[in-house]
Image (cartoon, rainbow, N blue to C red; front, side):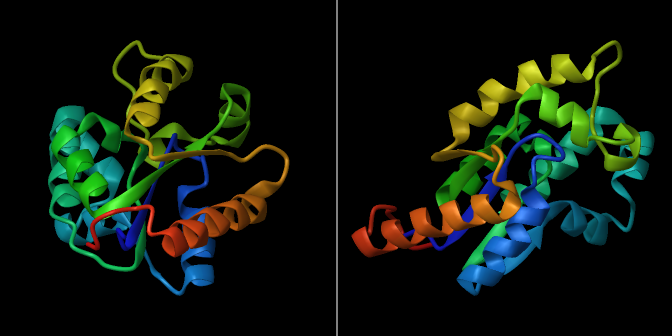
Length: 177
């Protein structure tokens, strides 16, 4: 059984909120990889993007995620992690990957200042373009997909906890990492 859970999805999909709640309910640690990146570089995400550009930030993000060594943790990487094949291969090796799916309408409602959130938009790209580009990647990497719907974060956490506990009992997920 893989001992970690990685939450992927668009910015504002609830990776941090749901991650913290799920970690508490499972008795796991919570790892916000954006904070790990800031600690390792000594810079805010937006500073890395401003200084290194989008490609430079993606390299830093991929390296930090690919080198992550944790056990019994809920991991919340940034939404752009799905561009890093090496990082995603590592996360799939050490964890079950859960895609927190949002509709585009819900994403627009939740998002505030994109720059302040560290959201990477290539020149000329709209939020809708980004959504359409990333959703197939999230779906490709996901072991489990959960939509928040109307229940809010608590309902998602309850659903994930039930899935996780059933999987542990049936030993569905292989390889204890």
